[in-house]
Length: 338
Ligand code: WQD
Image 1 (cartoon, protein in one colour):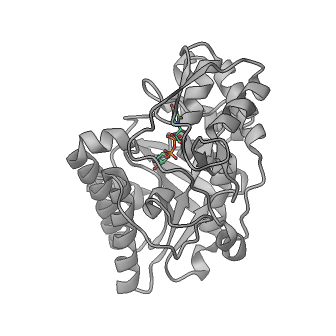
Image 2: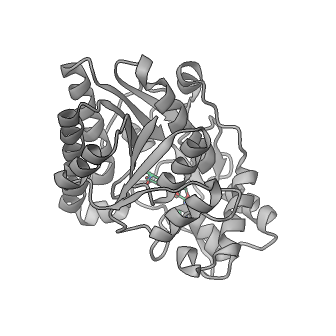
């Protein structure tokens, strides 16, 4: 298939591009490069030995999407573009709603106009809010916990309504748990702007000596060691989940949502130990207060994705740490390392 990948130069986008290309598909990338680097796309080309067209532009700009759909024979779209920092979304809600929802609407309008009605959307486990029980299944109640999460939930609602209005649409929302790690080549990985918000990029920078110590947000949760438990999945597994979704779209009318996770929980202290083992470096940390808005435990029941998409995460947290450490050590300044 010929796939348009929005946010294609970002962390999830680049890994998804590699896996799509290696599965024999073609990709065209659209990215505004606001939180990503064109160097990342050159690295995708190095890994795959393929030429990857990058259109610099914003998904919310109808002309940008219209141009690509006019120039390229696109079969399906994977929509990864979007603002994704939870804290920033609380400080700048209008920017988050405007950006993420405009992008979704403009993209779907342009797709409809061009008769391209197959879409895979990057959603998030944040749509489950604070789940009543774990593991989380797709039919559990959804709720809004912050503006970022609201944009994911509203976008899924838009897609559900759209698919209900016209049986030609085939849409899959992938609810990511916590993606970590990097491509095993060490050529692409996560490259956060400024201090990382998420646990693994922060740990990785402490290991590298770029930051002095990790703050562990709370050790008094009702979990085995008191620290927060999450479902961390290797970004290559996540990327392969997109390939599986793309390859099953044609037989799946309507809108469907699937969890992409491992089904296993890892605590913050376990994450620290795993990264120490992979890097051979000590990770200094101190326990501080809980981070507002955090929940104790969150992990997936990924069985629906296995049943319907034939997808299952196969890589361990240890492997993800080893790959993240290779990326970090080979590229101490991310894509600016040259
Ligand atoms: C994981 C655990 C923290 C940083 C968030 C968003 C979600 C998705 C992914 C996407 C928690 C603890 C973290 C640190 C710590 N968004 N932690 N010290 O909160 O599960 O999910 O990111 O793009 O929508 O909510 O992930 O990596 O921030 O935190 O102790 O410096 O690590 O409290 O238990 P989270 P995270």
